[in-house]
Image (cartoon, rainbow, N blue to C red; front, side):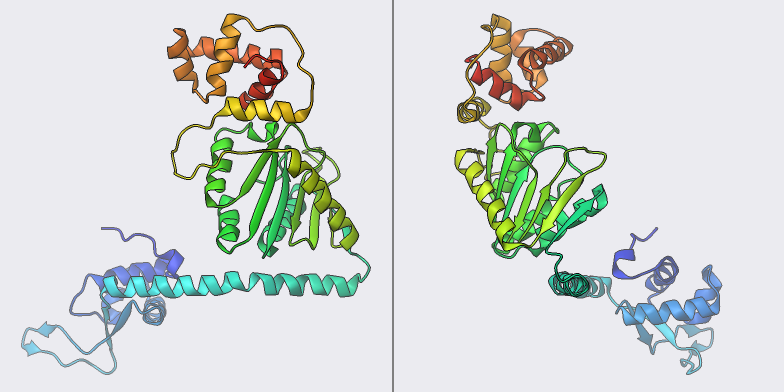
Length: 357
């Protein structure tokens, strides 16, 4: 039987092999016994046993196995090792590791402040700087997420330079950070993104949606902001600023867009009902202030729009319309082209703007 990996608890492969040997010998085993059955030399076995004892997984045993003449006394020169009951040892080690990780996570703010202070001393006037490249822009966004202790504001729009991290945001929400985000209709191109935003709403994110946004933006605690200065996905650039005047101006820009954006329905229960896309799309279209335009839809187009606006999958649409899934996808592709839409939700917005739903 192969043991599950204990690498996350600090048990390297050699120590894991030695641990398995000790674990399967109730009477204990000495270093020579480990070397005899394992693939390690005496020095490696001794080091591994000492490490396992530090972790609380093994202990020195005073019990020696009986020999042919009776019970043999343990040798002071060859201490024996026995396993601590893993039902006690492993949970205790996991708990200790969790405490250490929590302490390390809590040190992030202190380390970041030291990092920033050093740079401010080197460049005392650099309250605003330019960062470029996916790695640096993404790193600064993550730093603002982790730095927020009271509030976090965001404009979310493509292109994206890093993948979103729901766990980071959930952690901030759990600490009481008020998190508000405005999304564009193009934010929901990726499969499952809409439901992901609604899940975050269930954790406390306040989300709204609008037709378009001028920039990508993040503001932490009304004291530092990250704002895009270009939308080239291959060469992303952004400004990081701690200038009170600039941060205040960007905060006001956020509030202006927030007031006219449409709230995203919250999913309070995992796997809850599909959102009423038609209603939200109609409200986004109305809020955009764009006039209705274009021809009237065909009956097939009207049926297709109604179904996708209700959140129906391709399979459900095919069943309802009595056609194949392949036909649905072809019609949907044509519909997106007709509406100039990049995704289903965008199609719903455009259809509502034209009065199709």
